[in-house]
Length: 147
Image (cartoon, rainbow, N blue to C red; front, side, top):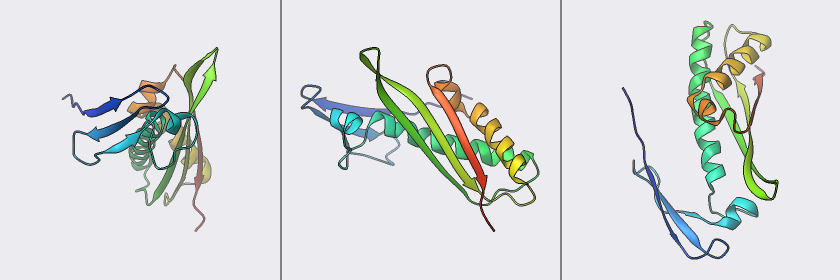
């Protein structure tokens, strides 16, 4: 069963001085401002494609890790996931170069090594990771929360 999701941007003006407004067709978010400066300088309350990639990667990874923890026999408690997506100049052009995942979580009955292994499996099995794989570096740092 395939699912499709849509987003729409209306852009006005040049790259450096123009701006856009992003709407998610689900209605969950609308009117998000986006500019070139929000990608390469300071965000100043505006979003960027890289921030949206980070959001997609973090949420997808959290779901994948929840599944992996269940498969390992631990009903996961809280998972705090952060994704950092990097855009940089490479060979004279701009390129998304990395997505770094960090997670701290509660996983009753698992030790640190098992939690880290589950996080690695989730990183490799998450559909967003699959879409990004081969195009940029994907890393994960995982740790169990202190009780």
